[in-house]
Image (cartoon, rainbow over all chains, first blue to last red; front, top):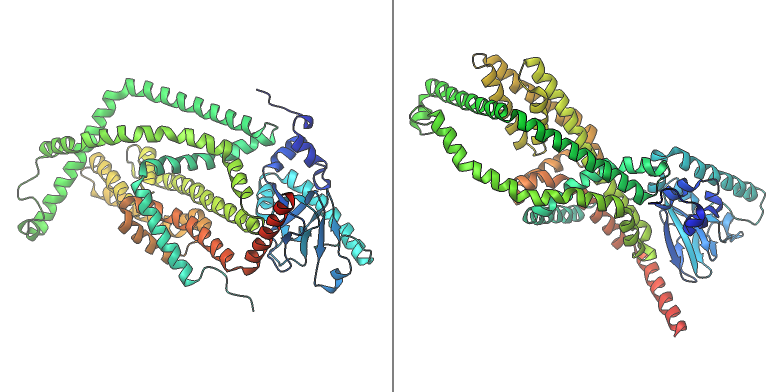
Length: 158
Length: 370
């Protein structure tokens, strides 16, 4: 029985390690996190979530591309797109407020979903892992907010 | 204005009907339901240990194997210890049992006499035996009538109970994978709601079973302390047995109280104050249970209104007897979450239209492939 393994043994963990949100996590932390992630595949033009839906969690793009459109004036001009390694719908991780935009797959897309209920469970069980993810999440959100404030056409907070 | 949250009246009717039907069904397959529930209890108790090992660096499957091995070792050691103890003290235990059985019957006979003396009408109405009870004959009759049944039940339940560790092991090992596979098969439009449903059901079951364990521990501590202060023999064993019997709402507490009263009556045949003390103790623990412990442990987890809980207990008892009494609340908790979420999905036209759009895209992609 082989107890301890490296990332090379597990391509899935290697894939997770390559995502910006999880880059600070160790192998064992990634293994624990992997239990909570749900992989989804979307066809081109399929709606991932809709504006007004109750936000239940965030999505991380593994492959493909996602376009975000909104009826909100501030977001209309931006029409951000998310590629591999980027995440969207992050506000759904913090509250049950309605989504502010619609996310649509621009091409066949593979995404990982992390739901609030499971993130809360992780936070209660393992502060260290949850803390690292939340810190990375906050950094990206800050960066997006700054760019939004400077009216740069880049990924806003959704 | 924010729309009213929570299930509507028709939804509640469906929930109550479904709960009654499931409880009725469970009563018919009790041989499978009991090991399943015990396996779930074991799963929720062992899951934190598995998580700790995963955090320490073990893969999930290896962590489960380690925990299962530890559990097996602990069970074997406990059984060996019990067998050693039983072989050396079997005679003493049998004597003690006979002693307390006699004591209980004597207490019964004394109570009968006292009642007949104070209220002679009861004997005239045939509610009390016309002649004094022959204790030896009663003991023999009870043994003849019930001993075979009890032994038969033990052999009947043994194979089912052997399923408990087996089921618990596979739930620990593959439970999350199974959940992920089920979720994977759900269409994208309903995925988030379905996952939320799974997490709520899991959380409700965990709250109930962990709550039940906590409640049993609190009841045992309170009863054991009270019985010890009253000077009753075997306070911890009696406290534990009475706490486990209390899993059967209402009836269990009464049976537990009768058991303790029998012991008290044998230990102190000339001191009715001690017997009344036991009854008061049980009453106090019952009140503490209903107003402090239960809301702190199980009630908080399941979030069921007290009135509905009581009504469902009566309904459960009417539909499936004692089995219904035990199972109705956890089943209600789970069914309420499932029906509530399904009602939300059915009522959400946006989700349904997204599902239809995804189906069209799927057909389109399949057509392009051809």
